[in-house]
Image (cartoon, rainbow, N blue to C red; front, side):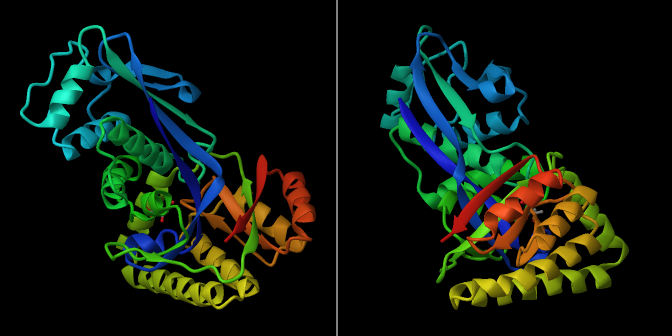
Length: 333
Ligand code: MEV
């Protein structure tokens, strides 16, 4: 059996604008995570089970555009295994040692089960899809005796993100793969973010599923209608992300509050906020948060609020009273 874990994530600054080449900041959230196990089973085929969503299916029976099927097949092809053995389980014959070993492992009686569990709420802007992908890629490649490096893991996870989100920037899979705070610009080499002074964030869930694929597509429609205005909004978000990086690396996290409020206003203009997100944001500010904004695709999912350690419990209570379904306190370091 092999097993791997991957954290959730939050976007601190720059969501949506990052799709258009602007910088954004994201951090892993290790308070919740996805986990994948690969087990030998006495049954033919490659079985994928995700008890949380009621899935238990043989790979060849999943639609080819299914993200999990795409993922498993991408791991095989990256490792040079062109056609993973199916339920029929013809042994793979190849001069390549890895393939031969793999072929030996599977026959009509023996297969594998890839079991996925996750504590990350689905469709909440917390990177659940990316974390599931990264955990599976790591567990499966380790099971096949060829653990993939971060760069390859990230590349495969990005491929699957495109199925989930249409035209993603790649920020989610990158922060989840590297498990460290990042300053991210699409198609540029990854830059790690040095957090000079740790800070406290509350993450509050509206309980409304975040339709990221749709909100990303809707922002594109707005951009097509008015590129000049939209480019100015994206640039403003990008410059907030740059200033926020200086505050984080310079040891002034208290400066992030005003930047978060400003970024939230931009996201409202991009039409990706919603009543519940605005309500939670207001409630946290009224309870003493230093700043607050939605995080991720928006129109549901989660918001984040910056707090001192001392004020955090009072803000959490205010968020629950305002209707948050769940509030998590996390330390960014
Ligand atoms: C989703 O977590 C972040 C978005 O900016 C989309 C993306 O970057 O792919 C909304």
